[in-house]
Length: 452
View 1 (cartoon, one colour):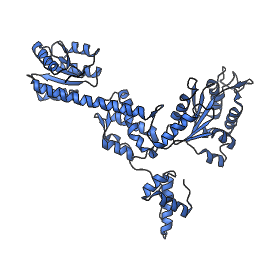
View 2 (view 1 turned 180 degrees about the vertical axis):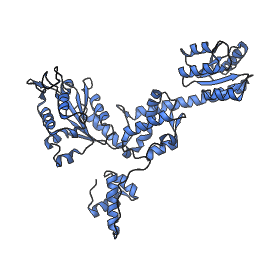
View 3 (view 1 turned 120 degrees about the horizontal axis):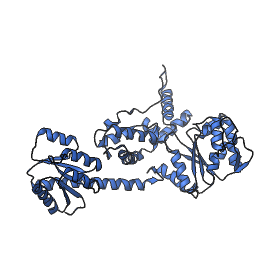
View 4 (view 1 turned 90 degrees about the horizontal axis):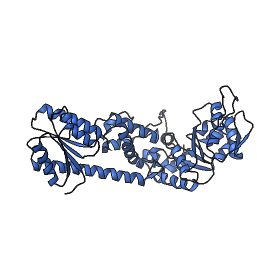
């Protein structure tokens, strides 16, 4: 059978080298030969080979093991077969330890060579098909670098498309690590402002005075250390989008300033007297409940209504577990080459463990977990052992059981605790309690319980 995979035979003995190459060519493979380790390394630097047959003992200062190690550095996916007439247990162990896939002894049997190469090529074809399939799936379920096939996320993607070219402010709410900035970027880059700046600011990372200067800029001499005029993020983002992360953490003074910009579309630099007009679309994000912040007086209601024109509520990862396999494979494909590891997949047991974990840190925690597992993994497949650092027990709110408690009181406590632990998610709470949703709704109504 014809194949596009290239093979190289490295041997200083002409008879052995040309015989082996001839057998492989008869099977339909494209074969090159090298008379020394140095020659093979030079050729490997400019052309990719799927399989290398390398003689263990060669003159010229570069033996088979050294040749193999250098070729593996150049082509990590290459399969190395060490060939020798001097077989010993020690040389076999050394060869396999350093990365050889097979170890064969001269004189070589043409039929065994054919079977060996056919088996290796079949595995490589399967691996390539797997990579292609995963890339197709990734593209199919990818939306501006957001990977998902969750129905909830599909609704969000559709909403993003609808609002992307509007000027209206957008409030993105969700737990830490759910991808709020990715959604903000998707809104910007799928709309008519895509060619203009996208500027992000973390409102929680700066003090009030620094954040005010960061947003609105300042004039020279307006405060100690202001040695020159500086443009603020609003000015820099003119024509584009300003993304304000953790908006729930800004002070009352900055809330007033931000409200004015949203209403008037202009502002003054700190210490300045010149009015600056801007055309900026503002997208904000928070992991706090701004409606509750308005009720307790820590957030202005008029600013909240300005920001809350379009609201996007991102679900936590535990509510879209069907995305975990897609995300894990995407992280492996991206992170393993960056780290320098030949890891291409996760075992069934490892994936099951990740599916059962509650992910309080959401997608960000999952990515960090996969990266850590890749760094410490000793094989080419991630397994459950590589994720031993995770706490596999889902956190639950504990409650004490006072004496003389009635069955109704006990049921009330159990439902309240479960609703709190699931943040009001009825489907998840019903699953934990072992009842259907209609039964849980009846109990919530019976005991007049809050949803979260």
